[in-house]
Length: 67
Image 1 (cartoon, rainbow, N blue to C red):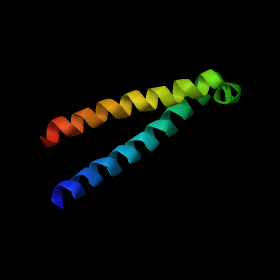
Image 2: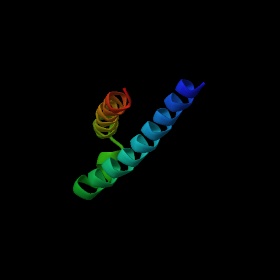
Image 3: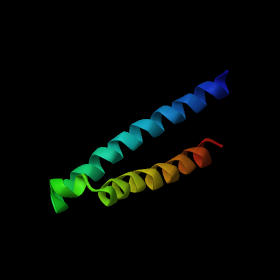
Image 4: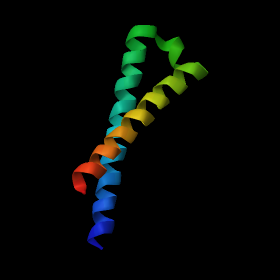
């Protein structure tokens, strides 16, 4: 049970981290490229790709520190 709960906690922290990153990436893109870049396919892929890569590395750090 405790393993399941700690796994859930890591998943929760990962989700929060991903949402924060998504907001930050979106704001940076808005600041430098304007509204139009947010609604292009490439813009969406860049934002989501950055969040996915960062979240994956953060998840690896969680796994390494919890072991």
